[in-house]
Length: 236
Ligand SMILES: Nc1ncnc2c1ncn2[C@@H]1O[C@H](COP(=O)(O)OP(=O)(O)O)[C@@H](O)[C@H]1O
Ligand SMILES: [Mg+2]
Image: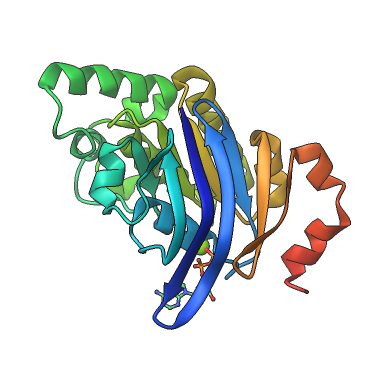
């Protein structure tokens, strides 16, 4: 299964902020979307989800164009978003938070999926009765990702999951992200500002600068590219 974006454009009012970006990811593959603050990373994944309506271009899921479909339709098509900022239900327990992600499933299926999530994130299993708001930042991030996985998506889009986390916690979150790909066979788009981290887990990366892909390639090629630094400093 392939998720491919072709010539995707998006605007806020009159101002176009995505100028025709293209990328693709296979099930079981993790790609990274890099770029400085304001480059258009969040807009790109919102446009893939249908949270921002694309003004042009296609979002192809195995060749079928889902561009502009509402977010709940994208979710039904097997694409889920873990938005920026770890939006969990702070007053609900860990397990209740996860159950919200699997509401339309049978009780047996929900149990099976909970077991999968607890295998992926043992900490969540240990804390299943704990109130979400009392978890550490890293645990809340794992919970947000776990909740998205409850629908057994084909693709998961993650918007800066490591933002504001301590380096050691970032490492653990990324190990889990790698296991989502390897053990669950799920495809992923990881939005990251931290190049080093992203290139450590993704097999391919795209660098956005002011709404356009200016650079893409495998981690080795990108790490060696002088253009990478330029894109990050936001210089043209
Ligand atoms: N809701 C919005 N309304 C107007 N402009 C926005 C909105 N969200 C983002 N932008 C603008 O779109 C551009 C891309 O933003 P964004 O996609 O959030 O970038 P990134 O996620 O790479 O930091 C920025 O110039 C930002 O100011
Ligand atoms: Mg963003």
